[in-house]
Structures are given as structure tokens and as C-alpha cells.
Length: 83
Image (cartoon, rainbow, N blue to C red; front, side, top):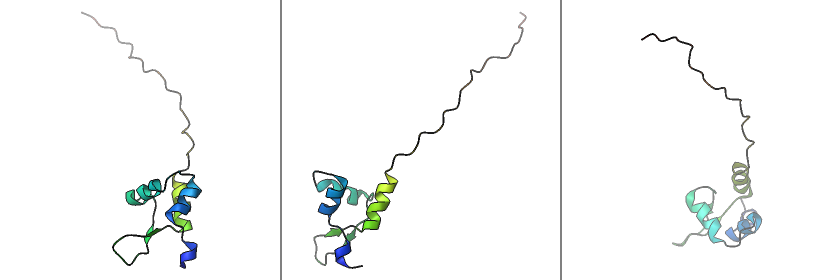
């Protein structure tokens, strides 16, 4: 995959409308966002594929609320007690 298709953390932050790139690094470190280290040195240089960003966004979509079922009140059985 050529590097031109990979997104930098700054690109991802712009697409996610984040004001700081630190939020993207936290998502990468937590494992929520899959990234590739393209550095050959000691300091990592992270890149995110567009597919990984799409997967991240689809996993964060709101899901419809479950349909609420009507709860009925449990009543005690009719029992006559004799003392």
C-alpha cells in the first residue's frame, strides 16, 4: 500500500473534527483505531489506512434503542391463610 493512501494523525484529526492530534494518538494507543508504524527508527511514525478509519467510525455509530416491552406487575397468588 503506497504511503500516499495512508492518513497521518493530523489528517485523521481533521476528519474526526478533533482540535488536537493527541486524541488520535490516544485512540491508537488504546487500540480503538488501528494504525501502522512506518518508522524505521526508535520514534514511531503512525499512519492510518482509510479502511481502518471507516471501521472505527462504523463501530462508533449510534445503534437504535431496543424496543421496550411492557412490563407487567407480578401479583402474589390468591392464597387464604388460616391461623
